Length: 356
Image 1 (cartoon, rainbow, N blue to C red):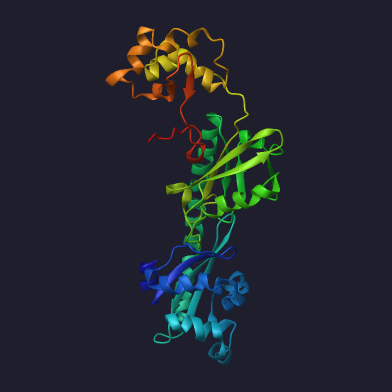
Image 2: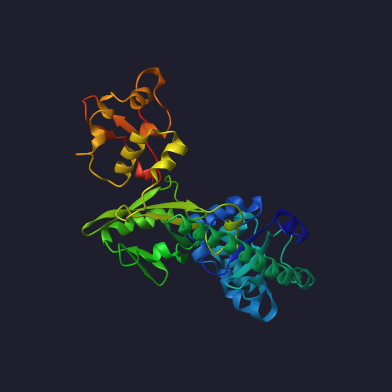
């Protein structure tokens, strides 16, 4: 953005969407202080330059003198009280579009250089077509990357929603569709809880991960959505990065939803033995816990859990205690009982808490 500003003879330049303006858009470093105030004090909601937007469709560019007289600008609190303070009260705004949104490339400078004349406007408006092509390509690539993530989560049985920078749903996978009416509602791209008291938490979760958020509060990591007669849904947000999070991307956030009541295919015991090095007894006990089955009456709650079985004794006793995921089973001090290790669903869906 600094190179663009230098080419245009401006103090700085920035990209702004025509609709839904918010912090976090690319801009020159020289404009950082003014942009912080622009959003913090609500100037983006009363930007007088929006009067020039209709001219973009006619000529591809507009400048301040196209819609405001010198007298208006001289008496305007926006121009003299705000923009002039940051040496950016003269603007040239070039419009361009991608397949979904309309954008503006804004060049700004102060009284020292004055307004953008006709020759400068004719030069700058040439940016419009290349910018539109670049935006369309970037949007296509970022959307493909984000939807590939949705498909990947579908393949591992995880419901997920792609959320845009405005906090609205762009797309969701089949697992997520099954939750519509089962704890979640989706109307006009707004995702809501069927239990109204949970909507504040869901909004906070999405809002805290939106690009350029104004709040200084730490991000909210998890939201719960309660359901009648069922355990709550656990929703986690991930801010997209890299290609999927380009400025022209439709998606900005992935919501991952875990349904504790959803039946799951049991893990094959031989998989636990092979991957984690569990004994046969440990694998079967782990599967009992995975499927939330009672351990009472299991033939494995007698000899092996008392430590009489050689494999279990070797794995769980003394300095040779197994540090692998087999440690997810804690053998209680009293014979014949098993205690599940604590699990922390607030940091993921199968993430074990570390013990003190």
